[in-house]
Length: 281
Image 1 (cartoon, rainbow, N blue to C red):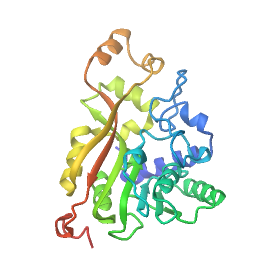
Image 2 (image 1 turned 120 degrees about the vertical axis):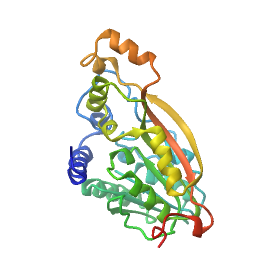
Image 3 (image 1 turned 30 degrees about the vertical axis):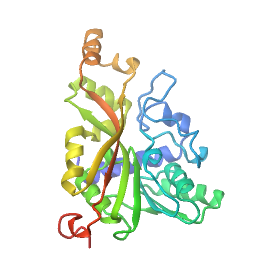
């Protein structure tokens, strides 16, 4: 059993490597995992290229959704992007909030922060900043964000309840989040779990969808809704390494699987009702 520190060290090492390699290499597998598929499409991430604010240099092909598309960002909003990587979602959020707004990206990996800052400088954006930090302890004061977004990041974090408490703390009363993440429905057979983890490293940190949604509710959020859900299909050329043809057929016919969900929720407008003692201070 890995400790939380060991998991974080592994994530930081892995994403340092990802920051230094090409998008094409990252898209050969999901979440920058080591096993490659001959299939030509990336079944995790959605296509960002049509969204206003898209910057190819900031797109490392690591997402599992389009949270900014669902985030209802308004002009002048302060937006926080958790696990901001090279800045892809932050720059799209900046196009929504405009020059009168502000975007703060937070990432755990110094190489990602350096890459994002370089991209922001090239674009001349003075209202987008990137801070290195742990999203379990955000380097942001309370009640500052109108909107928080995140794309395929919380599944990598050992202490997910701490992240949701931090999201609640940083949001303004009445603020909201839109988060894309990986969850499980049902218990994956051991061989399926192994195959999925080889292809999509982020699956190893995913939890059950019911548990995920329960954490959001238990933290104190309201008006919780799933904005989008899609199945994550592990390619046959990966499954073939671990399963028989009969096992693959049975798995595909079951309701058990890996899913990308985009979730919306709001911090209550009444600050006194916002969260457990201490998190709003």
